[in-house]
Image 1 (cartoon, rainbow, N blue to C red):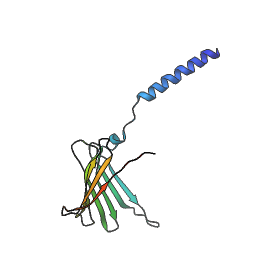
Image 2 (cartoon, rainbow, N blue to C red):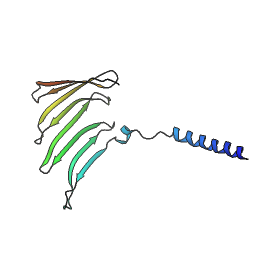
Image 3 (cartoon, one colour):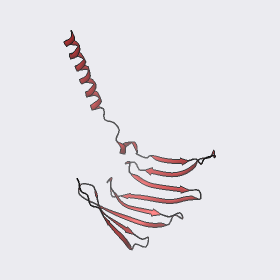
Image 4 (cartoon, one colour):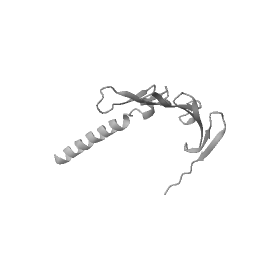
Length: 138
């Protein structure tokens, strides 16, 4: 009887494990499709929250815009651009509080998807700095 109970319990566990393994949870990118995230702040003693940050995702779940707010309005806005259906950001444009471009970043990637180089341009298109990424494992 004890042996039969153990076999039954093992069978139930195996079936439950298989069902859990086969049910694929929604991917992080899937959950972000067409998502808009608003972050609100509330000052101590105040009853009125104010918008602090707004992040927008496209129909592929990629971040396409992020706006940071201050008490006077927009503090900074960043627009993310992608090539085709790629999930890697190819270009990032940062705007100031007057919604004028303040910096443009262009990215290169290694074959494994890690960042290789970042080129920082001034709004007039002149290259300002270049950043290289190096990866090492211990």
